[in-house]
Amino acid sequence: ENCPAIEWQACHGGSSIDGATVVIPTADGGYFAAGWSRSDDFDLTGNQGESDFLLLKLTADGTLQWARSYGGQGADFAWDALQTGDGGFLIAGMADEAGGDVTANLGQTDAWLIKVDENGNLLWEKTFGTPQQDAATQILPGPDDSYYLLTGSTSLFRFDDFPFYAGAEEEAFTVYHIQGNGNILTEYFFQASHLSVRQLFDDNLSLLADQSGGKAI
Image: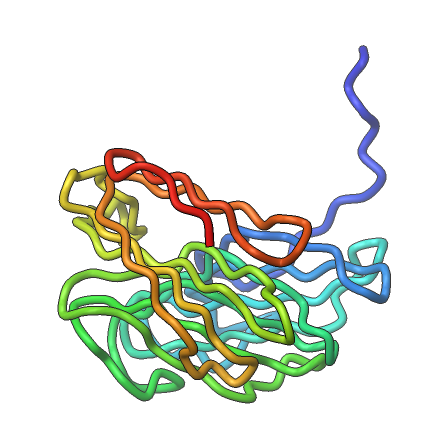
């Protein structure tokens, strides 16, 4: 009886399997959601492969303003997003193969970062990683219109083509300090089974790494 009342609910996507992994408030009072989609109908058109990044812009009451999907020829998943000062969005996740909107493949899977404008139009995309399996799990704002991108290089296993971290001890993490156009300023490498990143009040980061100790940037 103490459960909060639902103010509104909405379903958006297509006729196949779609999911949202992150929802953030936007400067106009609405919301932005990102995730993954296998659909090529209804709200979504132009599917590139097994699954694509799913992007949704909603009003404050959940009305769909626009929907976009971007990806390559494999299975792609978005895991984090933020709104930039120009009203656009940075979306971070994983790209499986080159092709379509993904211009480069560096290994088995790559960390993939895309920038879209306030209307969801793709401005640029960039892959990060190693010859192994990589994915981007967090994107955080930094000082002077820069950003921090957290990526992991690890053993992944799949369930119905959805990737999960296996928690293996050989995991490695890289924090990329990047410019607003995706160019790398600095890289910080950590060998650990888990890495927790939190933003501090001064736009720096606090990092806590399991097995390798903690380090603050």
